[in-house]
Image (cartoon, rainbow, N blue to C red; front, side, top):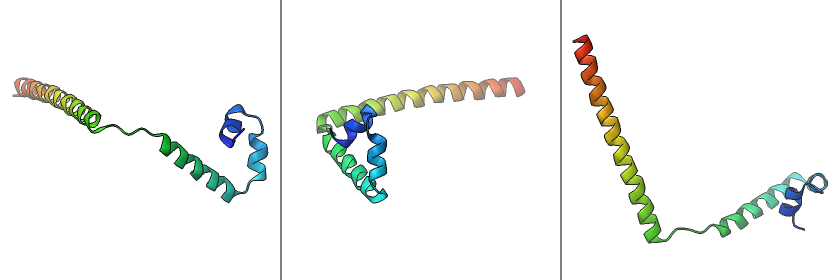
Amino acid sequence: MNDVARAHSGKGASDTAEKQGIFARLITFFQQVIAEFRKVQRPTRTELWNMFLTVLAFLLIVMAFVLVLDIAFSKSVFWIFG
């Protein structure tokens, strides 16, 4: 059983932490971080372009909504207060 599985199971996690020093735990931490980074699947160029266009479209919709609200509130304030 590796350190990650032992930590998730709750058995022996405190024993391992007490036996290892701070530097050993830091090294273990960074080894696990690097192992997780290697598991990351990066998007393809097409997927990235589709995500970019989706975010851009959503941004334009929100900008238009805020513009309409801004114009409506400014007109109503000028109408109420002159």
